[in-house]
Amino acid sequence: MNERDRLAAIHARIAAAARIAGREPSAVELVAVSKTRAADEIAPLIAAGQRVFGENRVQEAQGKWPGLRDEHPGLSLHLVGQLQSNKAADAVALFDAIHAVDRSSLVAALARAMDAADRRPSCFVQVNIGDEAQKGGCAVTDLPALLAEARAADLPVAGLMAVPPAGVEAAPYHALLAKLARDHGLAGLSIGMSDDLETAVTLGATHVRIGTALFGARA
Image (cartoon, rainbow, N blue to C red):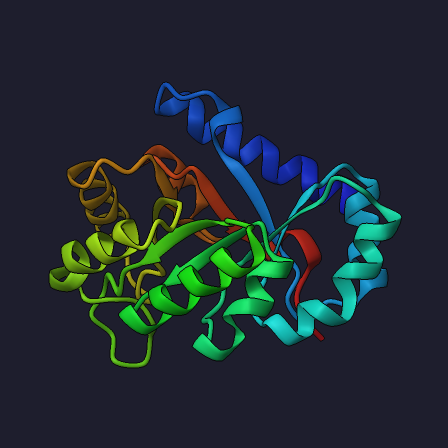
């Protein structure tokens, strides 16, 4: 299956799940997660029509996206991995959305960087929805305070993001994040990956982060 076929298959999965939920497929943004993929692996997906991409690390993105963007204007780049506070300025300069705002120190660093650059990428607050020690994200109980800090700092908070625990049914975690977003008046939900995108879309995902199903398994 080539890149165009893979992309069409993902859009078909999104559309089918959206129909079940009575949603418009266009309400779901497909973020193609291109971490560890070289520019020549990404270019065919751009040629197939994909315009929104996600990267996990600032330094890796800096190495390949300026050139790709020069060749292909109109691309949107999302940071979907953890962000160190000392990389906040680089992230603000490069990315159009940041999906992993998860602590007070990062809120402060992003606010300073955005003010200095006069550039305000959309922000998703990451919630550690499964209370897993090895994962980033704020605790559910800490979410109200962190959101208040982000709003006070004038971060453009678009919604919430989470990564459910591996190996278990994702639906309860997606549903909990959707409820938290509603409770806090947030429209954006960055949930859903290659294995659980249908569940995520039916439960309100506005952004799905798809890597393997678009690029194939990593070598």
